Length: 157
Image (cartoon, rainbow, N blue to C red; front, side):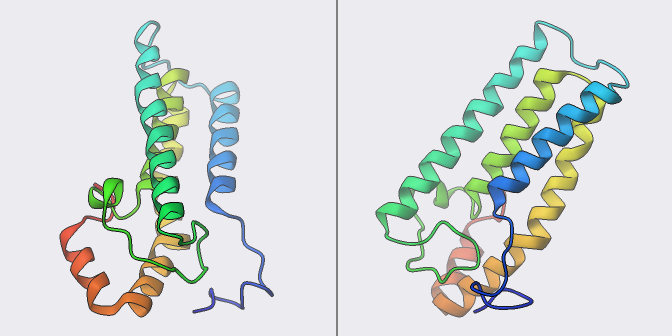
């Protein structure tokens, strides 16, 4: 299935890590330009390391599983396998969940209100731009197996 608006060869789309990078840059910009109010103070801001590291671990584990099952990690490419094991048994989107954890961790490390505002916006954007399309592709590729997996494992957590 081609992505909306063209084939992968004719349509260039930013990949999810680029969205994460843009969100991180925007968070830093907001924190510096409009820090509003420090809601998390030092040393409590260091608690942000936990979700940040967990997000990185989740992404690494998901990437390794996809490679082990010889399927693509890139959105809009035809999947080669339906992975149910490991982190994919906990969430259908461990990489996106990992990105959200990274953003939450960074927001905590910054401590001001403004970076936190981007986290729900990122979730909605990723859901609309990637997850909904990917899930339609997975259903088309794996049919009843996908529907069974979808019924068993939540989209996020």
